[in-house]
Length: 300
Image 1 (cartoon, rainbow, N blue to C red):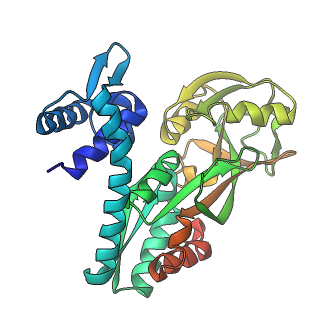
Image 2 (tube, rainbow, N blue to C red; image 1 turned 90 degrees about the vertical axis):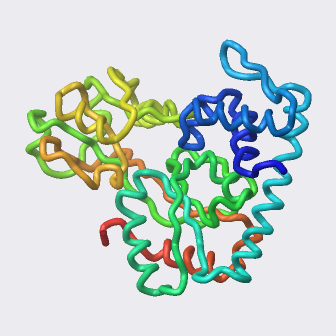
């Protein structure tokens, strides 16, 4: 009998084209992914992938299995959800969250959900927006949180989108900067000659900061790209450059940086909840969506 977890890992490898990329998507190490695929090959008795210099190629059997496994996993997830609704106690609803929402918005949701729906268990799952559609279809989550920018909308495929809130993008300055002691919003164009530290993103948002700056009327001088918002703050504090970040990402603000609002133009990051269209009638999912629409990060 095929192992469903190994099938999910194999499907991720097939979709991403490498063990490393699949591991990053699934929050597993490259060696763990490789080991699970090897065990699956042993179960089946035939090679599923060919290791090449820059990743993997599917064998003929591997391609057939990857194609069929997606449907099998969706059917299994649907069956599992139906069984959970019938027999599970307490009832469970699963929420996929991205990291900065987990630092601010989600704690408010968890606290309020537990108070209002004590008979239902809210389970959190670390999710990336680009993976939400597959995770929803495979039953890993019931509701997913996603983000995009007001100037660059993220495609969500066939999912239903519910808008939750707009959070402003803010300017981050080192304490020694000449504008740090002033009050009020700052025009991005007035900072055209400054060096910038940028948060790295996957496409289509790899050049989001450049899009903002060009909309303001200049081409930015990007001197460093940080992997996360914590290190972004650190580089700003060290004087490497200025930065722009969404408000929820700086809930835990360093004491040696200053945050100022932007205007002319101002930009926002939009936070949405997404679900499968057919799941909107589920009372548990509807309860969670209604609560997500009501809460705000500043309540934390």
